[in-house]
Image (cartoon, rainbow, N blue to C red; front, side):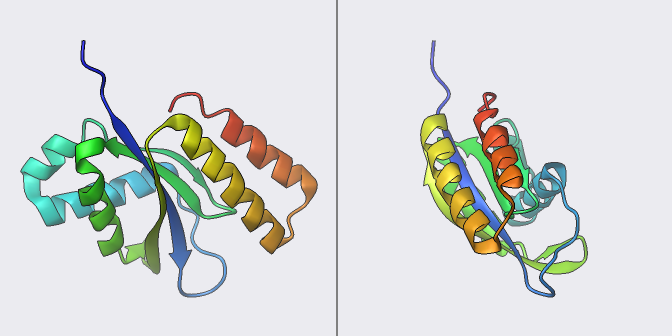
Length: 141
């Protein structure tokens, strides 16, 4: 039995116009990434990457997302993320903050980044506690 090896990309979604971006979801980000893969690598690229590609988490408050992909496809997915320039008809930039190899490291890194963002945005402690609980509940990684 062969174990499938994943990579987790922690991605920051930056909207250039205005401070508040459109209401996007993890499914919207998945569709954007898949369209970018199709544009850059064609049908063969979509076929090979689609089995492992998944947007596991997106928080609209901190604008952080977790994109899971296969280990061999991580650099290609990362390049497709950097080619994305728009989300729901607004200028957006998708920046890879960190690449992790295990679920534990992605949770630890996401906890750290979320705490930093919460302190920067001066969020209420209840919102921070809800974010922490949501991150801890990511058992499907």
